[in-house]
Image 1 (spheres, helix red, strand yellow):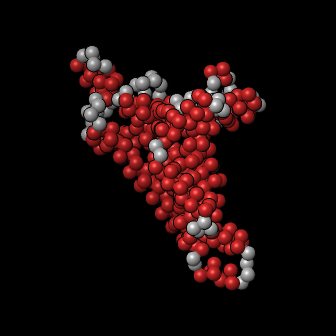
Image 2: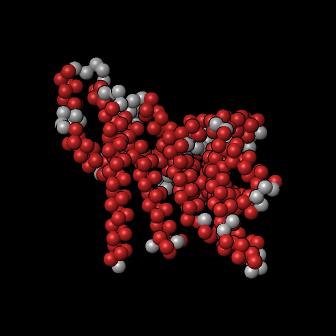
Image 3: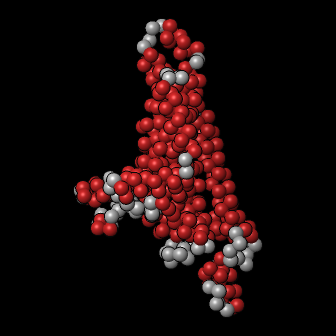
Amino acid sequence: MRRRLRSLGGVLLSLALTLLGLLLVTFVIGRIMPIDPVLKVVGERATQAQYDAAYQAMGLDKPIWQQFLRYMAEVLRGDFGRSISTGHAVAQDLLRVFPATLELAMLGTLIGVCVGVPLGVIAAARRGGWLDQIARVVALVGYSMPIFWLGLMGLLLFYGILGWVGGPGRQGIIYDGMVPTVTGLILVDSLMAGDWAAFRDAFSHIVLPAGLLGYFSLAYISRMTRSFMLEQLSAEYVVTARVKGLSERRVIWTHAFRNILVPLITVIALSFGSLLEGSVLTEIVFSWPGIGQYITKALLAGDMNAVLGGTVVIGTCFVALNLLSDILYRLLDPRAR
Protein backbone atom coordinates (compact mmCIF):
# COMPACT_ATOMS: atom_id res chain seq x y z
CA MET A 1 0.00 0.00 0.00
CA ARG A 2 2.82 2.37 0.92
CA ARG A 3 4.52 1.64 -2.39
CA ARG A 4 1.33 2.45 -4.31
CA LEU A 5 0.91 5.72 -2.44
CA ARG A 6 4.53 6.63 -3.14
CA SER A 7 4.04 5.82 -6.81
CA LEU A 8 0.84 7.89 -6.95
CA GLY A 9 2.59 10.77 -5.22
CA GLY A 10 5.41 10.63 -7.77
CA VAL A 11 2.95 10.73 -10.65
CA LEU A 12 1.05 13.68 -9.16
CA LEU A 13 4.30 15.56 -8.45
CA SER A 14 5.49 14.99 -12.01
CA LEU A 15 2.12 16.16 -13.33
CA ALA A 16 2.23 19.31 -11.19
CA LEU A 17 5.79 20.16 -12.25
CA THR A 18 4.92 19.63 -15.91
CA LEU A 19 1.92 21.95 -15.68
CA LEU A 20 4.03 24.51 -13.80
CA GLY A 21 6.63 24.36 -16.56
CA LEU A 22 3.91 24.79 -19.18
CA LEU A 23 2.55 27.88 -17.45
CA LEU A 24 6.06 29.30 -17.06
CA VAL A 25 6.80 28.85 -20.76
CA THR A 26 3.55 30.46 -21.88
CA PHE A 27 4.09 33.33 -19.42
CA VAL A 28 7.58 33.98 -20.77
CA ILE A 29 6.31 33.84 -24.36
CA GLY A 30 3.66 36.42 -23.52
CA ARG A 31 6.30 38.74 -22.08
CA ILE A 32 8.95 38.47 -24.80
CA MET A 33 6.59 38.86 -27.76
CA PRO A 34 7.14 42.27 -29.44
CA ILE A 35 3.51 43.22 -28.82
CA ASP A 36 2.39 45.77 -26.26
CA PRO A 37 -0.62 44.18 -24.52
CA VAL A 38 -1.71 47.55 -23.12
CA LEU A 39 -1.95 49.17 -26.56
CA LYS A 40 -3.99 46.20 -27.76
CA VAL A 41 -6.50 46.99 -25.00
CA VAL A 42 -6.66 50.78 -24.96
CA GLY A 43 -5.80 51.44 -28.60
CA GLU A 44 -3.12 53.63 -30.12
CA ARG A 45 -5.14 56.84 -29.64
CA ALA A 46 -5.35 56.47 -25.86
CA THR A 47 -3.92 59.19 -23.66
CA GLN A 48 -0.95 58.56 -21.40
CA ALA A 49 -3.25 58.60 -18.37
CA GLN A 50 -5.44 55.89 -19.91
CA TYR A 51 -2.35 53.88 -20.83
CA ASP A 52 -0.96 54.11 -17.28
CA ALA A 53 -4.31 53.14 -15.75
CA ALA A 54 -4.59 50.06 -17.96
CA TYR A 55 -0.92 49.21 -17.27
CA GLN A 56 -1.59 49.15 -13.53
CA ALA A 57 -4.93 47.35 -13.89
CA MET A 58 -3.20 44.55 -15.81
CA GLY A 59 -0.62 44.24 -13.04
CA LEU A 60 2.31 45.01 -15.31
CA ASP A 61 3.74 47.46 -12.77
CA LYS A 62 4.30 44.60 -10.31
CA PRO A 63 7.55 42.59 -10.04
CA ILE A 64 7.82 39.79 -12.58
CA TRP A 65 7.37 37.01 -9.99
CA GLN A 66 4.15 38.58 -8.77
CA GLN A 67 2.92 38.80 -12.36
CA PHE A 68 3.63 35.11 -12.82
CA LEU A 69 1.80 34.16 -9.61
CA ARG A 70 -1.19 36.24 -10.71
CA TYR A 71 -1.11 34.65 -14.16
CA MET A 72 -0.92 31.16 -12.66
CA ALA A 73 -3.83 31.84 -10.29
CA GLU A 74 -5.98 33.16 -13.13
CA VAL A 75 -5.22 30.18 -15.39
CA LEU A 76 -6.01 27.71 -12.60
CA ARG A 77 -9.39 29.42 -12.27
CA GLY A 78 -9.92 29.03 -16.03
CA ASP A 79 -9.53 32.76 -16.62
CA PHE A 80 -7.41 33.44 -19.73
CA GLY A 81 -8.52 37.04 -20.05
CA ARG A 82 -10.62 38.58 -22.79
CA SER A 83 -9.99 38.14 -26.49
CA ILE A 84 -9.37 41.35 -28.37
CA SER A 85 -10.46 39.76 -31.64
CA THR A 86 -13.86 38.47 -30.54
CA GLY A 87 -14.57 40.59 -27.47
CA HIS A 88 -15.49 37.45 -25.52
CA ALA A 89 -13.73 35.71 -22.67
CA VAL A 90 -10.99 33.45 -24.08
CA ALA A 91 -12.30 30.52 -22.02
CA GLN A 92 -15.71 30.96 -23.64
CA ASP A 93 -14.15 31.02 -27.10
CA LEU A 94 -12.08 27.90 -26.38
CA LEU A 95 -15.16 26.01 -25.21
CA ARG A 96 -16.76 26.90 -28.53
CA VAL A 97 -13.89 25.99 -30.88
CA PHE A 98 -12.12 23.13 -29.11
CA PRO A 99 -14.85 20.49 -29.69
CA ALA A 100 -14.50 20.99 -33.46
CA THR A 101 -10.77 20.19 -33.32
CA LEU A 102 -11.37 17.35 -30.87
CA GLU A 103 -13.92 15.73 -33.16
CA LEU A 104 -11.60 16.06 -36.16
CA ALA A 105 -8.61 14.62 -34.24
CA MET A 106 -10.65 11.74 -32.80
CA LEU A 107 -11.88 10.64 -36.22
CA GLY A 108 -8.40 11.02 -37.70
CA THR A 109 -6.87 8.93 -34.91
CA LEU A 110 -9.62 6.33 -35.24
CA ILE A 111 -8.81 5.94 -38.94
CA GLY A 112 -5.11 5.81 -38.17
CA VAL A 113 -5.53 3.06 -35.56
CA CYS A 114 -8.08 0.95 -37.44
CA VAL A 115 -6.02 0.96 -40.64
CA GLY A 116 -2.47 1.62 -39.48
CA VAL A 117 -2.19 -1.06 -36.78
CA PRO A 118 -3.37 -4.03 -38.92
CA LEU A 119 -1.34 -2.72 -41.86
CA GLY A 120 1.80 -2.52 -39.75
CA VAL A 121 1.29 -5.98 -38.22
CA ILE A 122 0.63 -7.68 -41.57
CA ALA A 123 3.54 -5.86 -43.21
CA ALA A 124 5.89 -7.13 -40.49
CA ALA A 125 4.51 -10.66 -40.70
CA ARG A 126 5.06 -10.65 -44.49
CA ARG A 127 8.32 -8.77 -44.51
CA GLY A 128 9.64 -8.17 -48.01
CA GLY A 129 6.33 -9.07 -49.65
CA TRP A 130 4.15 -6.90 -51.83
CA LEU A 131 1.95 -5.83 -48.90
CA ASP A 132 5.04 -4.77 -46.96
CA GLN A 133 6.18 -2.69 -49.92
CA ILE A 134 2.76 -1.04 -50.17
CA ALA A 135 2.78 -0.23 -46.44
CA ARG A 136 6.22 1.36 -46.73
CA VAL A 137 5.16 3.46 -49.73
CA VAL A 138 2.00 4.57 -47.91
CA ALA A 139 4.07 5.64 -44.90
CA LEU A 140 6.64 7.41 -47.07
CA VAL A 141 4.00 9.37 -49.00
CA GLY A 142 2.22 10.21 -45.75
CA TYR A 143 5.41 11.73 -44.35
CA SER A 144 6.41 13.56 -47.54
CA MET A 145 3.26 15.14 -49.01
CA PRO A 146 2.25 18.57 -47.63
CA ILE A 147 -1.16 18.27 -46.03
CA PHE A 148 -2.36 21.65 -47.33
CA TRP A 149 -1.65 20.53 -50.91
CA LEU A 150 -3.51 17.26 -50.39
CA GLY A 151 -6.37 19.20 -48.85
CA LEU A 152 -6.66 21.54 -51.82
CA MET A 153 -6.45 18.65 -54.29
CA GLY A 154 -9.03 16.72 -52.27
CA LEU A 155 -11.44 19.66 -52.34
CA LEU A 156 -10.90 20.11 -56.06
CA LEU A 157 -11.51 16.44 -56.86
CA PHE A 158 -14.06 15.16 -54.34
CA TYR A 159 -16.01 18.41 -53.82
CA GLY A 160 -15.48 20.52 -56.91
CA ILE A 161 -15.48 17.82 -59.62
CA LEU A 162 -17.15 14.70 -58.21
CA GLY A 163 -19.39 16.34 -55.59
CA TRP A 164 -18.99 13.39 -53.22
CA VAL A 165 -18.30 15.43 -50.06
CA GLY A 166 -19.42 18.68 -48.52
CA GLY A 167 -17.39 21.83 -49.01
CA PRO A 168 -15.38 23.89 -46.54
CA GLY A 169 -16.85 24.52 -43.12
CA ARG A 170 -18.33 22.28 -40.49
CA GLN A 171 -21.90 22.31 -41.82
CA GLY A 172 -23.89 23.63 -44.75
CA ILE A 173 -25.50 27.03 -44.31
CA ILE A 174 -29.00 25.54 -44.15
CA TYR A 175 -28.07 23.41 -41.11
CA ASP A 176 -25.91 25.98 -39.31
CA GLY A 177 -27.28 26.46 -35.80
CA MET A 178 -30.13 23.98 -36.32
CA VAL A 179 -28.71 21.27 -34.04
CA PRO A 180 -28.82 22.02 -30.28
CA THR A 181 -25.31 22.11 -28.82
CA VAL A 182 -24.87 19.52 -26.07
CA THR A 183 -21.39 18.07 -26.40
CA GLY A 184 -20.06 20.41 -29.09
CA LEU A 185 -19.35 17.38 -31.29
CA ILE A 186 -21.66 17.99 -34.23
CA LEU A 187 -21.97 14.32 -35.23
CA VAL A 188 -22.90 13.30 -31.68
CA ASP A 189 -25.25 16.24 -31.16
CA SER A 190 -27.11 15.59 -34.41
CA LEU A 191 -27.53 11.92 -33.46
CA MET A 192 -28.81 12.89 -30.01
CA ALA A 193 -31.30 15.27 -31.63
CA GLY A 194 -32.37 12.56 -34.08
CA ASP A 195 -31.68 14.89 -37.00
CA TRP A 196 -30.38 12.47 -39.65
CA ALA A 197 -30.26 15.10 -42.37
CA ALA A 198 -27.98 17.27 -40.24
CA PHE A 199 -25.87 14.21 -39.40
CA ARG A 200 -25.39 13.32 -43.07
CA ASP A 201 -24.51 16.92 -43.87
CA ALA A 202 -21.98 17.13 -41.01
CA PHE A 203 -20.47 13.79 -41.99
CA SER A 204 -20.08 14.91 -45.61
CA HIS A 205 -18.12 17.95 -44.38
CA ILE A 206 -15.87 16.14 -41.91
CA VAL A 207 -15.06 13.01 -43.91
CA LEU A 208 -12.43 14.63 -46.15
CA PRO A 209 -10.40 16.59 -43.53
CA ALA A 210 -10.67 13.69 -41.06
CA GLY A 211 -9.60 11.29 -43.80
CA LEU A 212 -6.52 13.38 -44.58
CA LEU A 213 -5.53 13.61 -40.92
CA GLY A 214 -6.24 9.89 -40.59
CA TYR A 215 -3.92 9.21 -43.52
CA PHE A 216 -1.04 11.05 -41.88
CA SER A 217 -1.83 9.32 -38.58
CA LEU A 218 -1.89 5.84 -40.11
CA ALA A 219 1.41 6.54 -41.91
CA TYR A 220 3.08 7.12 -38.55
CA ILE A 221 1.21 4.38 -36.68
CA SER A 222 1.75 1.72 -39.37
CA ARG A 223 5.45 2.46 -39.56
CA MET A 224 5.95 2.24 -35.80
CA THR A 225 3.75 -0.87 -35.52
CA ARG A 226 5.79 -2.59 -38.21
CA SER A 227 9.02 -1.71 -36.41
CA PHE A 228 7.74 -3.01 -33.06
CA MET A 229 6.44 -6.22 -34.61
CA LEU A 230 9.68 -6.96 -36.47
CA GLU A 231 11.53 -6.78 -33.19
CA GLN A 232 9.09 -9.15 -31.48
CA LEU A 233 8.89 -11.63 -34.36
CA SER A 234 12.64 -12.15 -34.18
CA ALA A 235 12.53 -12.91 -30.44
CA GLU A 236 13.18 -16.40 -29.06
CA TYR A 237 9.71 -16.86 -27.57
CA VAL A 238 8.16 -16.49 -31.04
CA VAL A 239 10.50 -19.14 -32.45
CA THR A 240 9.57 -21.40 -29.54
CA ALA A 241 5.85 -20.85 -30.13
CA ARG A 242 6.24 -21.78 -33.79
CA VAL A 243 8.25 -24.90 -32.92
CA LYS A 244 5.43 -25.98 -30.59
CA GLY A 245 3.09 -25.94 -33.58
CA LEU A 246 1.00 -22.87 -32.80
CA SER A 247 -0.74 -21.33 -35.78
CA GLU A 248 0.91 -18.30 -37.34
CA ARG A 249 -2.18 -16.19 -36.62
CA ARG A 250 -2.03 -17.06 -32.92
CA VAL A 251 1.71 -16.42 -32.76
CA ILE A 252 1.32 -12.98 -34.32
CA TRP A 253 -1.86 -11.65 -32.72
CA THR A 254 -1.86 -13.43 -29.35
CA HIS A 255 1.83 -13.48 -28.44
CA ALA A 256 3.78 -10.90 -30.46
CA PHE A 257 1.06 -8.25 -30.73
CA ARG A 258 0.32 -8.36 -27.03
CA ASN A 259 3.93 -7.43 -26.28
CA ILE A 260 3.85 -4.29 -28.43
CA LEU A 261 0.71 -2.87 -26.84
CA VAL A 262 2.60 -0.78 -24.28
CA PRO A 263 4.86 1.13 -26.74
CA LEU A 264 1.97 1.26 -29.23
CA ILE A 265 -0.12 3.17 -26.69
CA THR A 266 2.54 5.87 -26.60
CA VAL A 267 2.55 6.06 -30.40
CA ILE A 268 -1.24 6.42 -30.56
CA ALA A 269 -1.27 9.03 -27.78
CA LEU A 270 1.44 11.07 -29.52
CA SER A 271 -0.43 10.77 -32.82
CA PHE A 272 -3.65 12.01 -31.24
CA GLY A 273 -1.84 14.89 -29.56
CA SER A 274 -0.12 15.88 -32.80
CA LEU A 275 -3.48 15.98 -34.57
CA LEU A 276 -4.86 18.25 -31.85
CA GLU A 277 -2.08 20.80 -32.18
CA GLY A 278 -0.96 20.13 -35.74
CA SER A 279 -4.24 20.41 -37.64
CA VAL A 280 -3.81 24.16 -38.21
CA LEU A 281 -3.23 23.91 -41.97
CA THR A 282 -6.11 21.45 -42.33
CA GLU A 283 -8.46 23.77 -40.47
CA ILE A 284 -7.39 26.74 -42.58
CA VAL A 285 -7.78 24.88 -45.91
CA PHE A 286 -11.21 23.51 -44.95
CA SER A 287 -12.35 26.63 -43.02
CA TRP A 288 -12.81 24.37 -40.01
CA PRO A 289 -13.75 26.47 -36.95
CA GLY A 290 -11.36 24.73 -34.55
CA ILE A 291 -8.71 25.80 -32.08
CA GLY A 292 -5.94 25.77 -34.69
CA GLN A 293 -7.69 28.35 -36.84
CA TYR A 294 -8.63 30.32 -33.71
CA ILE A 295 -5.01 30.54 -32.52
CA THR A 296 -3.75 31.43 -36.00
CA LYS A 297 -6.20 34.30 -36.40
CA ALA A 298 -5.43 35.51 -32.87
CA LEU A 299 -1.69 35.44 -33.56
CA LEU A 300 -2.09 37.46 -36.76
CA ALA A 301 -4.20 39.99 -34.84
CA GLY A 302 -1.71 40.19 -31.95
CA ASP A 303 -4.34 38.79 -29.57
CA MET A 304 -1.94 37.22 -27.05
CA ASN A 305 -4.61 36.28 -24.50
CA ALA A 306 -6.24 34.01 -27.08
CA VAL A 307 -2.90 32.63 -28.28
CA LEU A 308 -1.65 31.79 -24.77
CA GLY A 309 -5.02 30.41 -23.71
CA GLY A 310 -5.10 28.05 -26.69
CA THR A 311 -1.48 27.06 -26.06
CA VAL A 312 -2.22 26.18 -22.44
CA VAL A 313 -5.21 24.06 -23.46
CA ILE A 314 -3.20 22.11 -26.06
CA GLY A 315 -0.31 21.65 -23.64
CA THR A 316 -2.67 20.42 -20.95
CA CYS A 317 -4.08 17.89 -23.41
CA PHE A 318 -0.58 16.53 -24.00
CA VAL A 319 -0.03 16.24 -20.24
CA ALA A 320 -3.37 14.45 -19.85
CA LEU A 321 -2.51 12.05 -22.69
CA ASN A 322 0.81 11.21 -21.05
CA LEU A 323 -0.97 10.56 -17.76
CA LEU A 324 -3.53 8.35 -19.51
CA SER A 325 -0.72 6.45 -21.22
CA ASP A 326 0.96 5.86 -17.87
CA ILE A 327 -2.28 4.50 -16.41
CA LEU A 328 -2.77 2.17 -19.37
CA TYR A 329 0.84 0.98 -19.00
CA ARG A 330 0.09 -0.18 -15.50
CA LEU A 331 -3.10 -1.92 -16.54
CA LEU A 332 -1.53 -3.77 -19.49
CA ASP A 333 1.92 -4.51 -18.08
CA PRO A 334 2.03 -5.86 -14.50
CA ARG A 335 5.78 -5.14 -14.37
CA ALA A 336 5.06 -1.40 -14.43
CA ARG A 337 2.83 -1.54 -11.35
